[in-house]
Structure formats: structure tokens, C-alpha cells
Length: 163
Image (cartoon, rainbow, N blue to C red):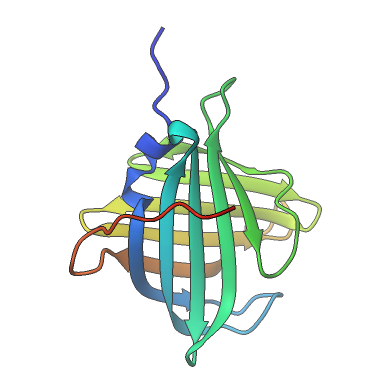
């Protein structure tokens, strides 16, 4: 029986510190606009979990923050994403994802609508995108597009958090 790679192995491109730019599109949650962003990720629990902290800044202040907790469903092998964000909606159910042509595609459905988040590894970082639709027959609407690169000094070690 083949072994399923740990989530830390699958998401190794997220581990470390990254900086980039993002375009937030107008949505029911707020106005659109360009901004900068930083992210850091670390492996936890022997690679069973990846903790990914993301902060979007505009005009020098944090405009949106999220703590993504990635794990793997042992029954299906799907990557699970519990996203705790500054908007405050609970991350239940988690987004569930699989790899398609080198891109991790995570889908989530709630009474508020459906979202699809993608993460695409790049040679020096990653690209991510989130789209949303209110109902299953409606069109996907862009929420945010971002591209992150590693700092010029390379991927520094991310210290484990105290919590």
C-alpha cells in the first residue's frame, strides 16, 4: 500500500517566510485594492500539520489576517484547510483539496456560498488565488490573487510558536 506524503512534504513550498503582492477584488466583505502581504509557515506534529500565517497590508496597516491550519484526511488523502481569519467566520467545514496538474485546489461549501482556493508552487515561492460563488449555478467571482517569493536571503528557519 503506498504511503501518503505528509502535509508538510506536500506543502514544503509554503515552509519559511515569504513576501509578495496581492490584488483583492471588490466583494461582499469589502472593497478591492492592491496591497502587500507577508506569510510564514512551519511544520508541526512531525509533519502532520502545517501552520501558515498570512497578513495582507494596505497603507502600512494590516487589512486582513489569516491562520491556515493544513492537515491530511487519513481516510481520503485529501488536504484539509481550516482557515481562521480576521473576518471571523468559523472554518467549519474545512476546505478539502487535491492536486491537479501541480496545483493544490481546495473547495469549501457553506450556507454563505462556495469558495475555491488554489496554491501553485513556483521555483522561488508560490502563487495563490481565491474565488467565490454565492450559489452552485452562479459564476466564480475573484476574491484575491497573490504571488509570493522567498526573501533574497533564502528561506530562514521559522521558529515554533509558544502556543
